[in-house]
Amino acid sequence: MKPYLSIIVPVYNTEKYLERCIGSILEQRFGEYELILVDNGSTDKSLIICKTYEERDDRIRVIHKEHGEVMSARKAGFDISQGKFVSFVDSDDWMEPDYYDILMDYTKLEDVDIILMSGYQEDSGQKCRKVQARLRQGVYHKNDIIKILVQGGIIPSLWLKIFRSELVGKNISFISDNVFRGEDLLCSYACLMDAHTVMVQNNNQYHYVQHGSSLMRQYMKEHRKSLYYLVRAIKKIRNEKKAYFLDFRWNQFIQQELLYLILNECKSTRFLMGIEEVTILKNKFKYLGLPDIMIGKEGTNALRARKKEEKIALYLYRFKIFWLLNMYVKKNFF
Image (cartoon, rainbow, N blue to C red):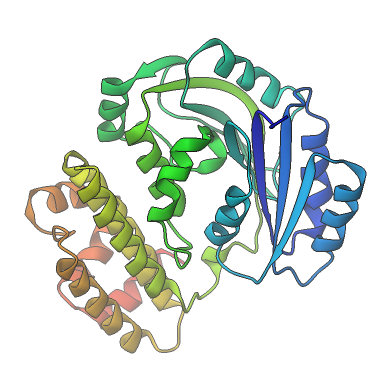
């Protein structure tokens, strides 16, 4: 008998937190699931921990693959999944025992394509804040979903959602394995545009954990490649789904990722060379057929909505005042 829910957990060097994550899933009162643990080339004891749990519970399957970005691990898990619905969980997160029981009951009562949840974001110092969409609890249909996307009322993170599997199967191929920032937004928006019914349920039982060793604190040499493939995916989604009504959101999103890329280059000892390469990358956006992200109606409106410090940094970049950009970013962002 096929499981009702597939829970996919990409795992990479999280031996310190992995048992808490797996244990919280096995303690769920809802039992009609399969748990797919995708070891993404771990170099610690994560794979051993996964295999140990696989031997104990026949609902658990373990995949081992060479290390890649997290989306490649999610795809590998999804390719072998059998559930009617799918949930993506990070391997250092955990959930309370009623989490899936409450949510899966709603999918059986309503013809729901996606459930949007709320939860808590915690850091390693135990600070905690509630995270949820700016929406009331209830059921939303096609026209409402489009309005919500335009207004930006949905948090893109995958851990805040449960999807009907056929929606993920239809849209996950839009996202390149090279993308390591923004992949959650691409997958969420693509699936939401195809959904007929979305339920918002603020049950606050998922705990998303961030650690001080966050990737954003490190220089990422593959960041430019990731952004290029991200923009390619946006173009494809925008054109195939005729999602021109989201141009303000696309511009806003790409501006944010460009800002992160500029901050990333400021961590490098080769800043000027790196920032020139970012400029070449930005010119490729035009080649891809996307509107300029900082001029024109949508780009300008998106820029106006940014925080003061972000706006100044993007203007310095736009007018190629790179020496001042480097000084300004290091003073105001680090």
